[in-house]
Image (tube, rainbow, N blue to C red; front, side, top):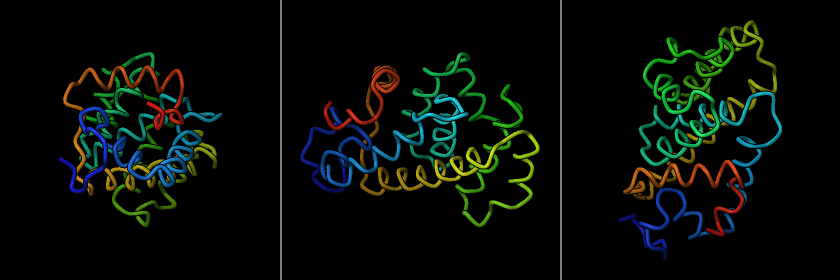
Amino acid sequence: MAHIDLGVQESEFPGIRGPLRFRPETGRPLLDLVEVLLRGPHSLTAGERELIAAYVSGRNECTYCCSAHSAYAAAQLDEGMPLVDQVHADPDRAPISAKLRALLRIAAAVQVSGRDVTADLVQAARTEGATDLEIHDTVLIAAAFCMFNRYVDGLGTLPAADPGWYAQASERIATHGYLPVLDH
């Protein structure tokens, strides 16, 4: 049970969904941010951006966010969950582009501290073809998911009890995006 009464049945609104409903006036801007970062027009695919969110959430040991965004990434990547699992296990050996690998290194640095992002990490990403927009958004995705992870875990919300819930949610997210989350 969450640390506070969220006013919802937590089994129906696991993870961040309960707090978003508890305070929709803060939930809507958070969803707007996620919609832009993970689904808006971009040179990185939605699956790659979801993978960055899942990777950071895994490093933060946030069960709900890692499970949710891993499922969302898998649904939008041709290689599916096997690739997501490989990235979680060892991004240096996962079969991803050198550019995405360099961006994941930046995301990992942000997860520790924004100050851990070095000029060398940024240059390595540029060398692999990353644009300033891709670097910017990787930093922002990583920073935002550190906040989301702490929001979810700080309120003691529960992850979904049924692992299949994440697959169903991934279909909704891939089809309709994040903004209808408050409506479901």
